[in-house]
Image (tube, rainbow, N blue to C red; front, side):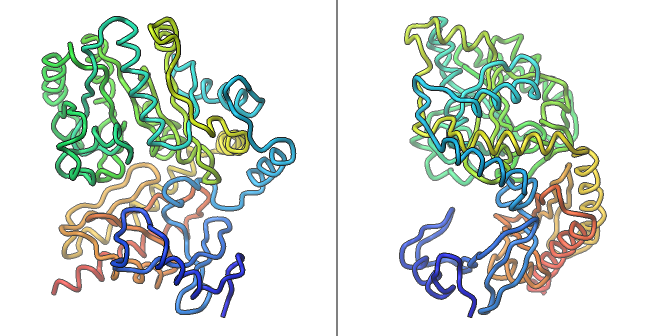
Length: 438
């Protein structure tokens, strides 16, 4: 029986897990599929324990959209090791350090123009909390405290802490349970996939009606992620920018899932060549090694807040700008920029599009869509993980469907044959789910 590196057998790990661990979006004691024990990860492959034996499976999820270079990349490993030898962590209150300075400088240089100030935090949800706090404090500092609400599209997802939850879809989203106690925000209808100027006009009309009470509009540009993996035409972003400027409302882009090449541009905002006032990045920032996110804002926002009543942005995570996380993030971004990432993402996109095409003919499949290095099969009912997980592993692929979606966001290092394997596994999962309906 293989043993995990911690010295526990897989059976012991599973027993402890069942007794004490609460997994994301799960019910204690009622998991339809017991968590699979992972004992290794290298490149795009995970080493898992299945039926008492080690098996390899492609990490088609990039470990929740983070590991764009795969696992155990030598450059990232070295950056982490070198930084650990020098300094693991110091408080960021009153102190600064080279990894934070270099990473901030790099982020400012590659993000849309005008985002010149960087606030580091621990996770994507917290970066959204900070973005909203910036927007609220900006208007309070300008003596307009009535501008305290947010506006967004339906179908979005911005995180699991309370402020981000308030701008997730209030009915179809995973946080609808809390709608009655969350801050009441302004929701526009779901943004269409194809461009329709009438939608933008209606959005601005709704924006105008609420402009006096709106601090900011917040959206996921081009791809709405965990809210439904929906894509939309980038021209909507240009319309948003113009509408927010006309109506004196800040614009926040949540690029936590889309940043660092996933949609085919370095940032989704680049598809429309627009700059938000505030932008959140995370997930792929560290290449999947550690938790780090950043909220970037314009100089104007930073200066207005700093000159305001509080005299400071009142937020300070304990592990803010962790030196290890900053160092490995710097290495991850440099590795990305040092290669022809655009061609790699385009190749992945083409491979997913070709490989997923057969799913269109399957019973129960309502849509197949690809954007950049994201492939989605949408079904007409929730995906049964008890069927989907083993079906994917039968084909040597790790997938984690949610709701009615079978999707993949693979590492950029995957060659065409691995992308074909991922797409084939997705189609086979959809086929197995469809066959159970007959």
